[in-house]
Amino acid sequence: MTLPPRVPLSILDLSPVPSGGTAGDALRNTLDLARQAERFGYRRYWVAEHHFAPGVASSAPAVLIGLIAAATSTIRVGSGAVQLGHQTPLSVVEQFGLIDALHPGRLDLGIGRSGQRRAELANRTAPPADPPQERVVDGLLIPKPFDFSKLVTHPQLAHHATLLQQPGAQTPDFAAQIDDVLAFLAGTHEARAVPGEGADLQVWILGSSGGQSAQVAGERGLPFAANYHVSPASVLEAVEAYREAFKPSAELAEPYVLVSADAVVAEDEATARELASPYALWVRSIRTGAGAMPFPTPAEAAAHTWTGADRELVRDRVDTQFVGTAEQVAERLRVLRRVTGADELLVTTITHEHADRVRSYELLAEAWNRT
Image (tube, rainbow, N blue to C red; front, side, top):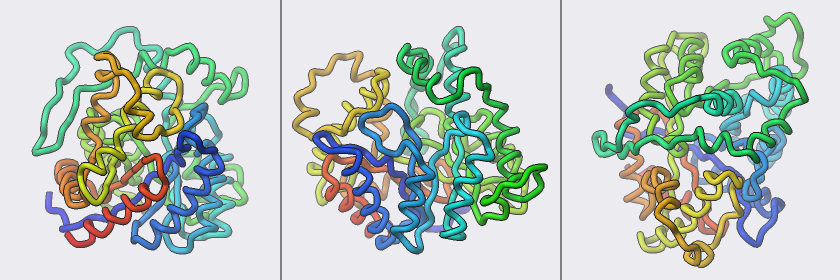
């Protein structure tokens, strides 16, 4: 595969709530970072959908995207991703169509099937036999898979799942939902979505494995975003499955792959590692079923007493976070891009102090644009 010398960088923002801060602080920081990202030259600014997380304020992507679009003027704005298992295709198209009516041609509708995938994992009766072991592929660490089945069967998460849908509601097949979204946008559905019909949205599918998300994205000729930052063990199978399934469409003549990564950049490596040090504790809060905690300070993180089981719980995420100077992180991103064949990279950075997060993105953009 022949790749251009440099691919675009984009941003994924969870609107993290810092310890000692509020959701309002997090959302104001998101609006400021979006304006700064536009100035730094990032291609798109995506927000994620998370629920029941004390440390994440991006629970309603469409609302937040409307605010970001109003606060910026040129950067593409979108979702990474709307959880379609909790909404109908019509409601999603109407929400994004409303924003597009006021900010035409700048919106990305990124869709995920996380709700359905959680149900599949919860119903799995046994872990997969002989799971792959950690390996390095052309310089890129591919850790052994994290077993999400224990997390999705956590009693509190099971209760939360009931709060995201009306009683007795059943989520349709993901492929059928995507077809409905595309039909509403194209005006070929039996019902009309107003606003929404004819909206100039770019529809993306996000996926963490080589399963249905990758298949649906490929078969419908849509761009695909693969999660190295969430599921680094399966990123290669995800992009391979997408490319194998790809069929040209009116939107794309060839596959288009975006790959995400966690990164923290500072003026020197020691400072970057200090800023990134709370990340392990934050991931632990997610994987123990408590929901993402307010992002700790380095001092708060240092006070935590770690067990061996704790460290194993977060090891794949910590080991695949890119931390260092701008040149060090840029080089690791180049490796990620080379191994995955990514057409674009999506960077997510979380630090306790907002100024450190802004500076991380600024330094990275400067280094990336020099390569």
